[in-house]
Structures are given as structure tokens and as C-alpha cells.
Picture 1 (cartoon, helix red, strand yellow):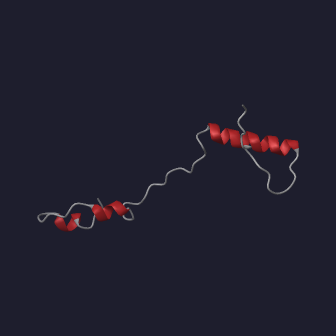
Picture 2 (cartoon, helix red, strand yellow; picture 1 turned 60 degrees about the vertical axis):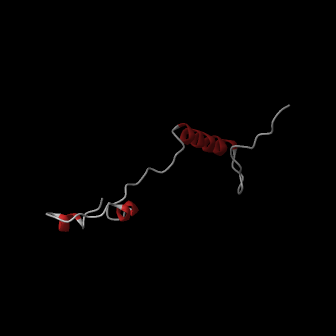
Picture 3 (spheres, rainbow, N blue to C red; picture 1 turned 135 degrees about the vertical axis):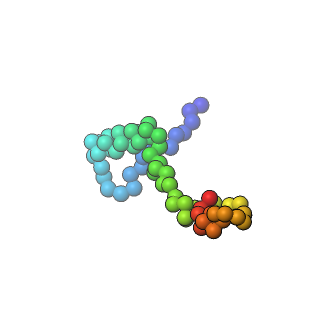
Length: 72
């Protein structure tokens, strides 16, 4: 019994020729082989990191005023 497979690509507009479809298939295959093509992870600024609101309480003592304004 053969299972029905969905096509990898589907043309929704226009009429690409065989060369255009081959080029598109090659690009999509290369991206998939390279790891999915996901966007690179962007690092957050420590000032905008939401984890900064979950930090431990600031202790009293020397340098406490400086530590109160620093993230993390």
C-alpha cells in the first residue's frame, strides 16, 4: 500500500518553467541541508532582558547603590 505524500513545493501564482522550478528546488534543498535556515539568535541587551525583573533582592552595604542599577 503506497502512502500519499504531499508535494515539497506548490506553485500558487504564475507559470514557472522547468529551469525556474529546478533552481527553486535546489535553493530550498540547500537551505534544508544547512540546518533549516532559521534566523540567527539575537542577543538581548542586559537592560531589556525580562530576566532582570526576576533577580535576587539587593543587599545593604558597600556598593549596594551601584548593584541596584546593574542588571543581573
